[in-house]
Image (cartoon, rainbow, N blue to C red; front, side, top):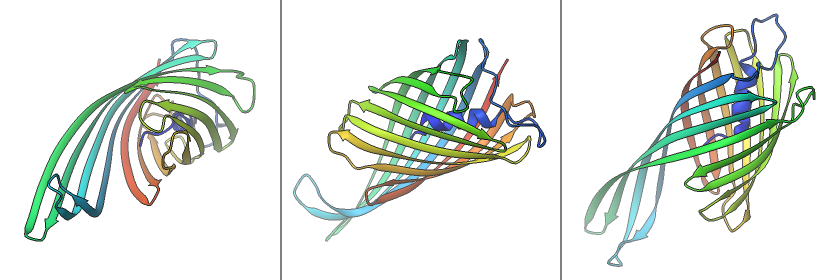
Amino acid sequence: MRWTAVLVLLCSFLAGAQTPIDSLKRPDEASGAYTWRVTLGYTPSGREGFGVNALGQPYSFTRLSHEWRLSLTGTVHFGGGWKTGIEVAQVTSHVHELQRYPWGEERLTSTERTMAYSTFQEWRLDPNNPWDPRVSLSLGHPWKGGVSVAGSFLRDPMVLVGEIGLRAQEAEPQGWLTLALGAGFVANAWISVSASGSVAVPVLGVGVPLASLGVRLRYARDPRGKGEVGVRASLVLRGDRAWISLEGEWAGRGP
């Protein structure tokens, strides 16, 4: 599951910390400033159950899947509180299934690769507001779109972030209401920890609500916040299913 825009904001705010005794600040968003991020994610999952093949023969099965996600994200600030970004991602899924029949077993293996593209526009409504409200619009392929409102509050050495939004997509169900909350703690100029939670509920069509809880550890490659590496672990819940997703990332900003 892809992390919501609130986590991008949270990571950006935490990168503004300089030294343990400096006040926590929001990063400079002057015209021409940019960020980039490379992320590699891994999600293992499995299921057991019963099925019927094309000949009507029943069987029990055990299915194991490995999903790898490689993404590249870039953003550019144009001044006036306007920022635009784009993400390109490749998802590779390997599925291994063992089917058990009364007369024996059958093993199936498949691999699927997909490409996804998305872009977003963000407007910073009032930089002087202590909650720093922002509005974002996004579009992606395979077709999806969304609008969200986010805000954050700094209370050194903590930062709190919240977001609410609507997301539409081509697949069923077509509409979702999303809510995300996050909190980060800056230990010093090099290390910070953040936790987040999100929930998505269908509002158009019929679907199963989705919830996630995550923890992220960030290490700055330099005290000016120009580069960082991080790891993230998240627990995803959907109906009676639960799985864990792991991510590693390498990011930078300029000029």
